[in-house]
Amino acid sequence: MDTTMIVLLLAAIVIISIIIIVASQMRERARIERARKVTALEDSYNRANRLLCEIPGQYLTNDLKLLLIKRMEETCKDLQALKSSQPVSAWLTNAQQLKKQVMDNEDQRPPVKIDSPEKSSYVKELLQNLFKMIEGMHKAGKIDSATAKKNLKYVLFLVHKTHADLHVFQARDYVKQNQIRKAIHAYHLASTEMGKSRDNPMAMKAVKSFRTRIKELEAMKGDESQDAGAEAQSRLDREWDTFLHDDEWRKKADYDD
Image (cartoon, rainbow, N blue to C red):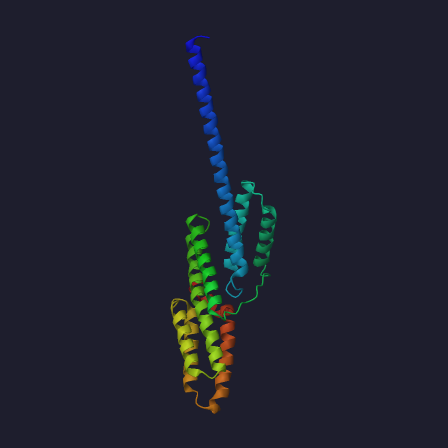
């Protein structure tokens, strides 16, 4: 074998080795990228499912539920394409069954009382994550601008209501303890929170109700006013607890336009 053949053989070996190394690196990069996409999609599914399960039932409209389910369905289909090792088919089936329940108005979720600063902060965090998810779906072209705007506006309103819920709970407790001054302050704080959504008729209805309650508390004098104050408190409690289910006002709200 002459020198030229040896050189060509060595060159071929080097080239083949380089091709093998490059191919191996490309496969490894593809594997890593696939694993990254799978992990991101699984996180996305779990995040949407968590929001659906943990956001208080009184806050979730059917529109919000369907958005979350839509996100879960799309994620499942992407995971199936990537052949995820997770039970994606079962996830997708459950999401589709839940979607039917929501569309048939058969999905009823229990309300959650916002009775501590920790619970208020946690629900606020959930709502902020929901806000970001809807923004992401809009940027990705999964939902149109009108749908995104309507639901983002409503979620922002819910963030304000979460704080108001806590202040109302505290105000009720202060009234029971006959700490009227503190109760009035708590209602003022609740009114301020709802006032941040002043373009929402439901929020303005709540502000008006709080102001009425504040006047009632300010007018309370001695024991003879306690019964009247308790009656007014009971009425306000019922109105606030069913606030998000007031169909008449919901139809007038901007986010339903």
